[in-house]
Structures are given as structure tokens and as C-alpha cells.
Amino acid sequence: MDIQQYMTTQEAAAFVGCTDGRIRQLARKNLLPGTMRVGKKSFLIPIREAKKLRKNPHKTGRPRKSAG
Image (tube, rainbow, N blue to C red):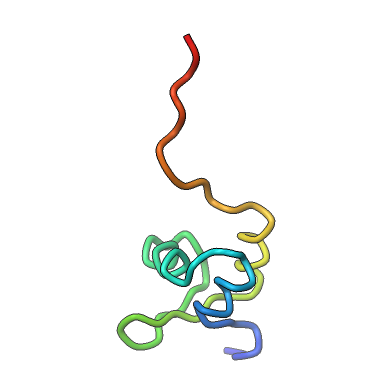
């Protein structure tokens, strides 16, 4: 494991533009492959996954009703 290829949840949140709670939520749901749990609440997020998330963020909230 090369620690330089990972970032903390706080660093990932700042990089992606969301909250660290949202990053932890995605990590708990296994939506960020390669994430490692450190302790009870903390995660190490692979930089490559943070870059993918920054390019294509997950949609949040309820889907809109279709017109008609």
C-alpha cells in the first residue's frame, strides 16, 4: 500500500466539492472501490476514485417526475 495514492475523507471532500459526510456515506455503501477503513469512522480514499467522482458526481435527492 502506497499511502501517497490515498487521501482522507476531508481532503477528498474538498477536492470533489462536497461534504466529508457524503464521502463517508459513499465509502460505507462501497461506491468508491479501493477505499480502506481506518478506525471507526475514518476512511482513506484512493486518489483515482476521487478524480472519477469529481468528473462525474453522484446525483442526490429524489428523481424528478416525468412530465405528462
